Length: 210
Image (cartoon, rainbow, N blue to C red):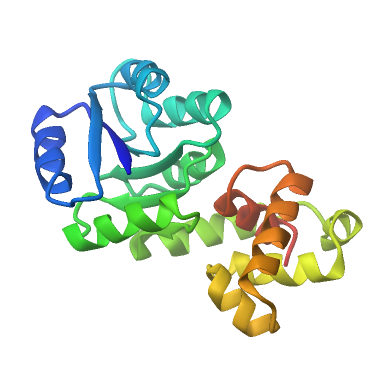
């Protein structure tokens, strides 16, 4: 897995690179000190995932996330920051981040989140998950009937479970479907909702009261 680091503190970047290089299936392909450099290096290195800090001089992590996801939708972005303010969390997810971790997260959890995010799952630190759900719920502005007009009944079933954070394996077991069928449903849901990952689909589901 090719990983790009983005943090304005050199000691954080260097320390994280040392930790990640211990994993045989990880390769750190670049290190950026701000959002502008992250966008530039993303174009050059085409990483599978970017570990993105948020509060940086020049272009911050939210702006960089939005720019990178627009230009390179296949690149996953996992936020790793010290900030758990409600607006930072919500804006990062809306910008296209697939997950949100705090820097005091244990190393093994970060490793697990990197692998899982590349595989299409979403990881949100428990310390901020409640804030995210509360804020999304409070911004519920659309009735569920709008989604019912876009998705099939089975796709709605899958979306409800996806919004609960279930993996494809969990969804398949709950709905008595094969994992391949679930993957096809998830792909169809993302296309119909016009989003690029499961986290954004889950946000839409909650906003519509599913």
